[in-house]
Image 1 (cartoon, rainbow, N blue to C red):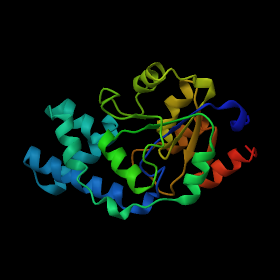
Image 2 (tube, rainbow, N blue to C red):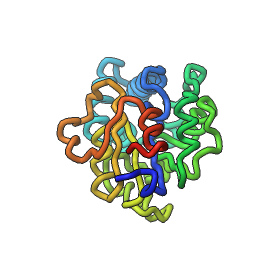
Image 3 (cartoon, rainbow, N blue to C red):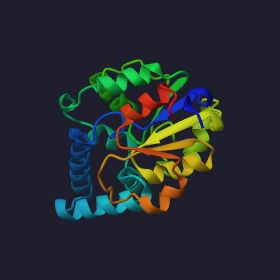
Image 4 (tube, rainbow, N blue to C red):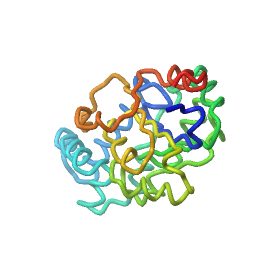
Length: 224
């Protein structure tokens, strides 16, 4: 398959995909989520972190677990856990150069909220670059890898699945991508996500890369 000739829609995860996984942003979010659970459920931080991990694994996001089990307001949760120091994130100019060369629509699909996306894009010099942002609120707070938000994004933006590629650092999030017809590309960030069933997901991955900028460079040069 030639990406250059066959893909007209490029769908990207944001966190640990369009910027380095070792930036420290996700670690900040993880910390704030633990503190949110402890405060709002009136429990010790150690127990809250265990519950946070349990919900993340069982529900796809800690948010969904808090919504389903405790009736937490999702907008309040998202606002609290994204009070981050974004100064630690910077642009990857090589990646940005290759993104600009891609022909077709570019969409962000994230389990985070839109304000977080906008804050990160500003720091990585991609403000106003993406045609659409599909966040957790637009997905009715249903997180990846549930298949229904993948079906919704197709309808919402009139996407042709067989002409679309999706990039994500969590392999299991690409299983439904493959099932709805996208070409899945796993951006292996070099860490083992405790909720990510990589081995079971691999048969659904058309491509994988440790360096998104190099992968897109090969795409733009017609090598893939």
